[in-house]
Image (cartoon, rainbow over all chains, first blue to last red; front, top):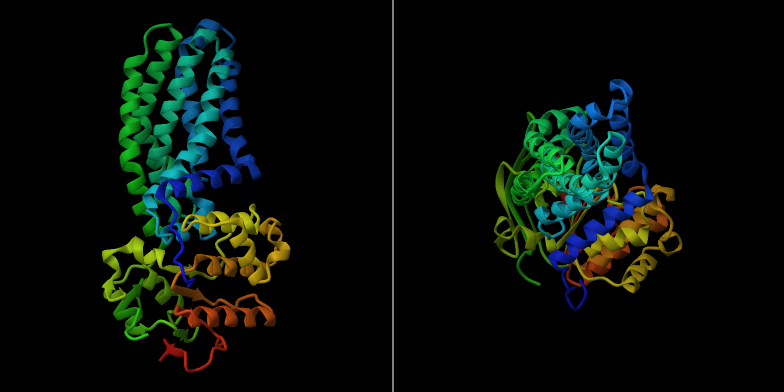
Length: 232
Length: 208
């Protein structure tokens, strides 16, 4: 014990540290960053190969292809969300840090979105272009994928925390999360479809936003409870 | 110092169908070390984890400064450091970076303080190398620097001398000794006694 007690870290500073740490780790080991992105590019590139290069066909299926591929790529990345930290004892130290575990997991989930959701949303219009989507829809596609992946990161954090104790957690995680991700897929692909047709896509975007708000407020709490159970 | 800082009453815990903690009572005062001994599987780690709340107790209560720890879990956690079997370090970060994030989450910390703590535990020479390139003993020394940096009254240590050479074992004893002298308290699961003067070190044998 020092004569003057140390000044505790403010909750927001702790949150910032968690995000900074995860970004630094990801750039030290970029394969976890690149794998989901490469998966997304390959899956979307398979469709023109299998269906033929007819732009009118491809443009019709583009929203669905982009969204299903983005969803699967994001799921692939979710498996990494807490696994390393659970193995090396970091989650234990999070739980004992005197900070709110919910807040720290919120930080981890935000970092996860910055590392997977943001790159996916940048890549999505480019892959849309290979499916015959006009460049004018780029902004709309980017915005919907960014918002949808944010909601998916939060909802997925519950699944990632719940499957920490499972030995082959990846498949179980997909089975748990895919049904919950259905609304994101529905509103996301609808917004993308409208954006491609050049129509107003604000309505499905607002619904996506509502899902983000709901998952942002509830998911970190549930994830923290699941992490506590996994530490036993 | 009078009165116990940490007190536990009648702790019971089951692991599957094994009754691991069977009514454990303990009380530790400031300036005192409690060494948990016992055969492998006697429940030393389980007791440490149950005290800090990582393992769920079926029965019994833990008091910190005579308040039930469940009333203020975060406040209790802010007063303790738990160091488990494996040092909680990220292999891809250096020792300095690891401590900056690990301890930075708990308290405001300066680079000078980190360097001083690493020098204290003899880890100054390899603190900027990625932890994955360090030996197990070197990692342990980096983790011990975290203990110094935390500046909290309660240390919960699980086999703190694992992987350390004889100099490292003396270092752990010196760190604990200084911590006790400053009024702190420590509970350590050990196979070999830490070499603290008997007046300040008690023992709880969990096999008995």
